[in-house]
Length: 371
Image 1 (cartoon, rainbow, N blue to C red):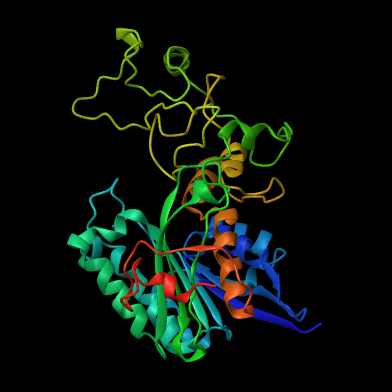
Image 2 (tube, one colour):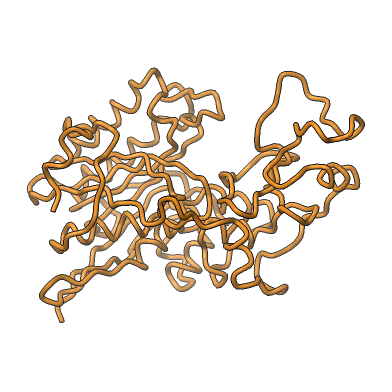
């Protein structure tokens, strides 16, 4: 059986959530020809994330991960690849932050994806960022990114979409903009895969308890909670947060003009988790719906759809950061399998993109390209 293996390179790779979704994807066409992905090179600046990626994606081979600043990468020396993935840093596009966009330290980093494309002209690429990227710099930043990606290399047909990962089997409300680009000379048009779990979301309780996590599972250390946090949590029902009106006065937070919904918020056992984040101080660690404690990293990893045999390197806080910054592997796989089906000519259910892309194809035109 003939195999069509895309060689994948990745920028800002983190611990490897996107890569795990990619290498787990495999599609066969009508003639039995297989389409799959092999990771050949990756880059990140975080040393623990690089070690995690090498351990899980490259069988422990650190040579496959260029650990260091993206500014020092010479793309003409990067191994040949025909697929590129880059979840470029979202700090300056997040609505939780100040949304500095291009005016921030991280906003312009997407341009290194453009440089990689200009050098290697991959057959396709996938770029990922937070939903807030659409409004940064009054929407001008996102349009500039789309324009630059469309014109990169030999030119690309783009399909941008705001994916709600809870609709794709991820037990978490996590919304991300994903841009898929396919080289124009290949005459292929990617379509947004239809949600697989709309209206029947997987709950946080199901993700964490089925099957039960072994006590000695890796990355499963408990966070030591202070007495006041334990007492506060006792008064917070599932799905509620630190601003719940039933919390006694002496346990209330003394914070003026700040009522962030995720502070000491307990999960609801019958719903997906709220968004897992990679940083934040007290009250941001995601809290169990019944037990008066924060989740362990292994539980957070389950909500991010990492399997229990995916081991993270680094301290407990470093692992927390890696998990929170990652792309959920199951969400990535849903999108990448659709990319493979596009190349294999295999029909699949799809929905119109709700974001106008660099080629002018928005929701009004997307149906023209369906099966």
